[in-house]
Length: 546
Image (cartoon, rainbow, N blue to C red; front, side, top):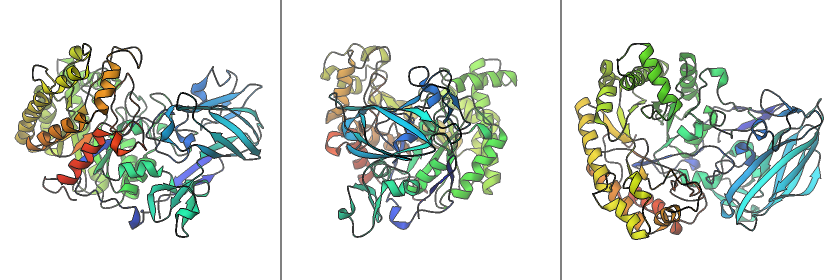
């Protein structure tokens, strides 16, 4: 049976440490491609969970627009005392209409109180502990929906809200959403009764099932998160797992449950401030709950060489404090290397050795000096299995702002006058592969793909953004992906973790292989290319079928 979420008094309790049934196993053992995940937010069009409230904005973060200043929260983030005010949240925002089915959704809750719904959510029927709402996308072809707790008994306050779709799955196929029991042979599992056991949106599982590994960096909320003790981790009992940086993130148990559900190796990213107790407990939980055939991929934080992140400044400060180098940047690289090895050794002790682990050091694609420093510091390479880079092709940051038609946009990818053309990026890969060989480790990509984005635009429709979206939707993009992935293989790269899961195209980038989770494959050329590469190029490196 799948992992199970059991409801208790104040929310979701522990997951059962059991394995998924054979029908849930995905045929991804020979896949050469993995995927990154998205941040858990109310506008994430990958829609990971059956329960839409899992990604809702926390009530605390909805002040002062939806939640009053006097409202008091409990330890899990539920409004315990309204004090004459209202507590509200947003559970859908800018969500493409086709990402979730329209219709009548069931809202379950514990406690006594009344909920008011807004935006594209309309109350149809209300009974104690159970509302029926209608979700219909607005005239903009998007969902935006809120709820407000207007009344709540402080002795039995309203809590444990769940927003559940009207359909379900057939028990023998967790990867396909079906409308009702007529679609199954007597084994229909409606979401309203089975959300706690099923957890994940079947459309999301169907997407994830083709990938060898899943990198949980965004999903776990690790970037720019200063918390580092075990009691500060994300918990199953949290009111939501959505929110801003430093708040959002799926609990470790949920990360493990997803890996188990689709038989994919989990790529865990350890918070930069995590203390040794946190690392030990994380490793123990993974050993206890992860399928025995799956290999934990262990990476300390995310892009610590990139000093725009809190973690980048943390490693620099720690490196200087420990006197690891007179140069602040190099001190950061050395501390990252040193702390990574400490974390690897903790996992080795918990797992009884390194055999089941994939120990990852990562660096900057275009800087061989960073690679040399990280792998060479105190012989870190001797405790490392792979070195990871993030190869993106996009031309260059200045030129992308100047394109005025589709032809000029594609030229950024193919014309080698641009530093980050496909060929030039593969040249960086070649140099990194030589260093990986020198130190006896494999080369992998922790992220990668197209990177057409102008970070200086102020709105989604400001030029050149519409052209960048158009380029990502064009059939030619599949051809460029094929060229790049074939080049990655030819240059000696191994596992390639594409960035990223289905994601709405906006001024922040057109990163998703799809624009929303249920987008038809014919409309998603990048995803077509990924699936085709998985099919025609089974993994080629030693031990990759494990």
